[in-house]
Length: 429
Image (cartoon, rainbow, N blue to C red; front, side, top):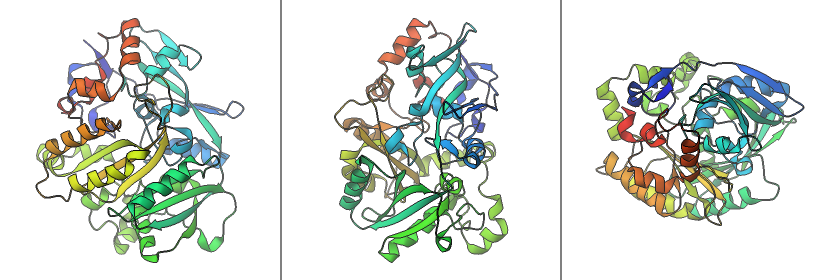
């Protein structure tokens, strides 16, 4: 019988509840500790259940941070290194796998193997996007960089999709770019580009501690700058900035608690927000789950920067979900399942989270259209959510050559299921 972790599906941050686990032999991998902080070699070593919130709470007060910090506090090291993660610093550092320096992996025969770019590199490059199907990762060394107290965040409202695409491309490709780049699109042609730079000096009257429980949801705050029609600057405490989308789960909380951003609610009950994703999944009945699946989309598409404008138009026609999260990231020519295949090395995470506003939305039909178009333009679909592709289509999108070779050479094909069987829609429930 193939193996898998015993962690129940409702405890994960992914959309599904993972019925495939019922077909796997459960192995406890409840490893929750930060093991080592090495300032001299600039890495932190952590076990797979350690969260981004734990790491920033430890590192930021010491003047250090992960080179990439995915926004939501409850995202785990194991989830990020076996899957992937993108952040507003990814235009410099790439995907989360690119800041993983080494892993300790338990193979099916019980052996503990250390792998890195220079040691057992074949195993190292097979881990990203594998979703735990090449071994049990029991610790990971993550690259850290010096940090400062604040992020000087510049808000730039834009009123044409062409301007959004041009400005994001220019800023992300600079030889000495800012530390953070992110755009929130509120309509097809209006959005706010945010450029952040770490600093230890701040103008007191412009400091905005957005992490306070009574503060407005971040995306609602950003939307106000569209009305001003002029650039503005704020200074945000670094850890508040990193987890700026946690309080509202991007903008998903608006559908769950419609009054959650009301001033009175924030001051009285904002401290309780957001409810844990695991709690929402655990208490969600089958009927509610089916309603969410039929009427809501939670997807990230990884789109070449030079095809961003057309994908904005495509998404507007097919789903019309706003806001849209746009986050540029660099890809590298490495033998992982996602790697550079064209001259374009800058991609954009195109995040669609919410209720489609198009008439007669059909979840499966629409996703099949979007998956097909994404493959056509050399893009990728994040595989933490619903994947409707056939196995051949999935292999067309994600390059399996190295992954298959490692599974064959290490004789682990019978010990772990293929990644498609863990992420395809039929395996989710």
